[in-house]
Image (cartoon, helix red, strand yellow):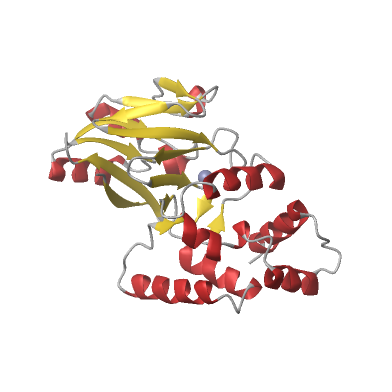
Amino acid sequence: MIEVVPIPQLRDNYAYLVVDPQTQKAAVIDCAEAAPVLAEIDRRRVEVVALLPTHHHYDHVGGHEDFLQVLKVEVVAYHGQRNRIPGATREVQEGDEIRIGSLLARVIFIPAHTTGHVAYYFPGAGVVFTGDTLFVAGCGRLFEGDAKTMMFSLQKLASLPDDTKVYCGHEYSQRNLEFALQLEPHNRALREKYDRVLALRARGLPTVPSTIGEEKATNPFLRWHSAELQANLRRLDPNVGHDPVKIFAKVRALKDAF
Ligand SMILES: [Zn+2]
């Protein structure tokens, strides 16, 4: 059992309060603003044991200092990135495990958006927090890595079980799906996903979680093998070729300009 509470942050970010209902111990993923997170912790009377940032960008760690003035907890950073994560107390690497009550989070190293980006995967609960690497129907920008590195990172996430719930760092789903539909207008799973997302947004609700299975069926950054996507890319750029990395890079470049 796991409880995941999305807490809207800044303009379109999410922090997540992750609670073990058995022990009422909890962790916070990507704390950009401390006040709304601390308010949720108070309301639920949970005991936070760790801050788990996916990467060092301010809209994922900007709340650390204020948070730590109120609650002293462990702060995780990827190996060698301690100086980029405010308040870091513990460095982790691929495969390391973090205990939150009876819950176990496993670190998955997924660089490219930044060199120290990680996901937190809870295998027992079937939940993964993907930060700015895998979004609903999108992926992060390549600030500190190339297309090949991002493909490898996304492939690691795509290899998790299909029913794994995906919680990402931003509410970008609607716009991402509008881009995806330009490349695969006949993908029925994509159209259905877009309708569901529009209905959620119309009610002001978050579009997370997605699932790994849904992402493999709809996310253009996991669909470089799609004949329809490739045909539409070639219409735009006859020189794109057949190399999956080049196809991926082209999709990323088009999204950057969308
Ligand atoms: Zn970022």
